[in-house]
Length: 426
Image 1 (cartoon, rainbow, N blue to C red):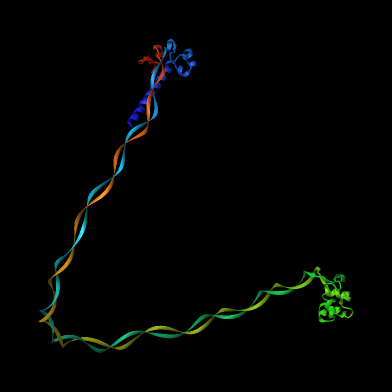
Image 2 (cartoon, helix red, strand yellow):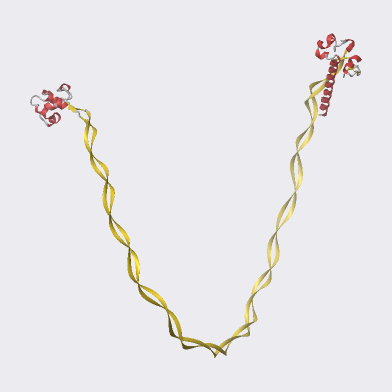
């Protein structure tokens, strides 16, 4: 990778050097190499050419060999590192717990309840009753009569004339007007449509005697076979039946026409004016009388009793109670409690510790180490030689024209003759 970068920068430096040589040759001829004969005059034809001269002003042109980079693709062998899987074997230690069961004798203590008897002394209060004489005071009531004067309010009633007003009802007759609706007959002229048609009898020739229409019902085989029967009379009529003796219904043209071809009604609508009487409502004002009850105030006089109160002094005898204190004596029983010690037998339960032995199964765990073998895969690096395509830069020699100049040509660009070949202006 570093070799490729070095080749790239070297190629870039050589390309820059070639471009600089071309620019210097063009500047020596005053731009004639890039602008043509019009800019450099007659001397432009021999300027910057191999073996050509530009006169005394520019000197003679020369050629120079430069190295130009050229890229090419080549197949080269390189060493690369690749990882290949490889199966290996290793041994490791595994620890597991193994349970071991054993019987162990163990002593334990239990509390066993036992009933025992003990004597205890206790104190009781014994009541003792004795009679005690004591004095006490009582209030004894004493009654005596006392005269007392008091004042009372006595009601006194008097009769008094009093006026009052009452509303006395009176009946009055009043006049009023009301609206009455009555139906009144009114004569009007209206237009109606009347059918003034008539009946028309078809012509006798339209019903041929003995034909299919008339002969089948009257005068035909049915009528000729039983002339004067109910069948002929029902279908042909009385006029046709009366002529059956003269040779049947077919001997009379009018009978056959009326029986077989009935009359036709010909309508004729006619508009005509007729007088009709209709009942219409008519509102009229009608006076009437009605009675109302009106209350009028009336003053009347009545006698009422008026109550008034007056004070009167009266005397009464009251029984007055007075209390005096007396001392009396009485005997009452008094109960006193005296303390007395007594003894009793009491049973109680006491827990006594007792040692016992039992067998228990105890599980102990111990670690056991084992060796196990396993296979595992690792990636082992290997160096492999491969052919790869590489871009290679080769330096190829190339002849380019270079213009040598004198001091006069170089003074025009301000640099003078420099370099190993006396090039101008670069």
